[in-house]
Image (cartoon, rainbow, N blue to C red; front, side, top):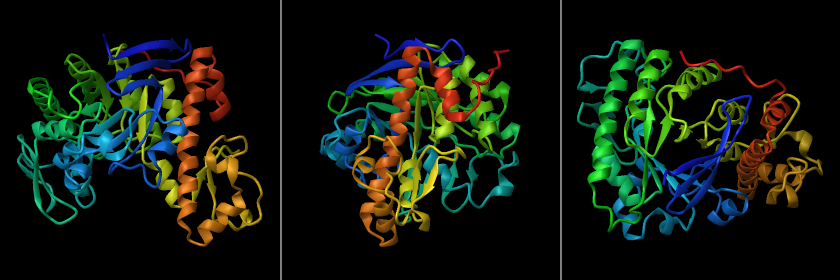
Length: 405
């Protein structure tokens, strides 16, 4: 049986609802995945996540490989047992984090003018056709990631959904380098798939893992189309849209528009690393099923609560002096634990006093805010009113989406 089935469609857009079957339960889509980079969604317990509607979370292969190590986690029964989460988990490949070590100080080198491979990108990372060699940000130790190694690490972590290892070009990269990088990602995808299919996983924490491929191509329509068709023809269980998504939101939506029409209708689609309120609604309208982002807990650590407001910037600065005596919850009508029990004034006091509870309460609210939005989107799709919900939130009609060429 296919792991993904569609249960509802919006007649005015590409939005759809579905069910994704995994070894640790069924995920209703569209879905937002809170990010548990190091086997924890920062400051929140698995029980709190489950109680507030999380059905699947994300872990990071790169960080967990470096600390505490995938083999240790496997000895403890895999990520589910190690972190006390009994629902589905997705792990990314580690590629984004490895290449993120690069794209800070080489702006002049990433405009399509890189030397022939192997390429010494900087003191932290070297890329060859075979592997990526990088230094640990923890202690400077040397590590080698091949596509096969990434899959091996993810097998030991035991997530329900694992992802192919890919090369991440920056959004500044020109056409030629983006095409070269995409071709390498395709070759690495083939190696990941072979490694996944050949491995005997019966003794590993989760023998029934799904493998998702990643579509690349930068901001170039012909490359996105070519990558979507190439990766879709391989025996993956689902697909991610990755690589460079552009320099801004408008460009990101254009990338999604130029990619989704060439993806199989019956496979789950994950837009990697995206999770702002407007991005969730725009992504769903364009046919995306899965999202992940660190933003809700990151905002919590910086004193920003997600709310609905006239400006549609979705932010409330809880350290603002105007909240010092405010008896309202962060968001009127929000069912989360924070909003049911505490006022803005109390949360303002916690941040001003540098009490850790403030970060926990706002992070919990922010995660719940996005999970509730996704639940409302799924309900609207089932009821045939997604367009109304989209307009209620964003104040504009559904976009007119381009047809495939």
